[in-house]
Amino acid sequence: MTADNEPANYILRIQTEDLERQLYSQRILYVSIKRKWLRNTNLLFIRKTAFIGSGIIDRFISMSGLTEAEKMICLENNYYGKIELAKLMRFYPTLPIEHTPIRRQNLLTLHGTSMARSDVLHIERLVRSRLIIL
Image 1: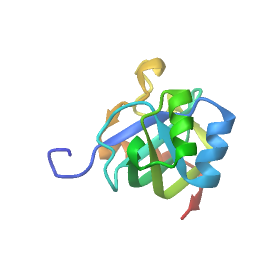
Image 2 (image 1 turned 135 degrees about the vertical axis):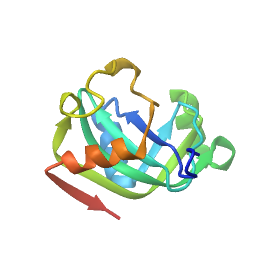
Image 3 (image 1 turned 90 degrees about the vertical axis):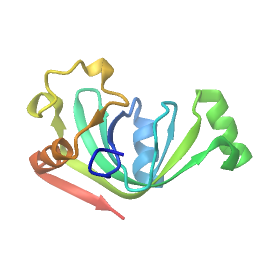
Image 4 (image 1 turned 90 degrees about the horizontal axis):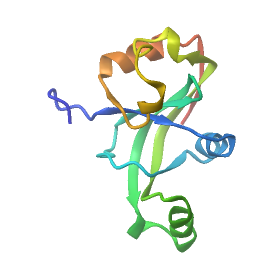
């Protein structure tokens, strides 16, 4: 939690097209990075050098709560749990990181980075169009 009792906000890198399809079609994301994945936490998704969307966590399921098939996915990919999203937005067109307040940060270290809610809102305001997936 942040100082004002809001959940933290994080950036997650979506490495492949398959993971991007899974994110937007099933509203789930398996994670290998450990954070306090709390309900109502805001996530921003990046792919290569652009923001592709954002989401709000509905719940996090650890390995012990997953089906056997999901446990196998986690073991094969070094994931430790699954995030289910309550709300998801896809940005059209994607928003280049160089046009945002975090443009000076190292792109390689953005995965799992926490950011202020004001920065998340600023980035979302820069997006020209979005598709909301409830």
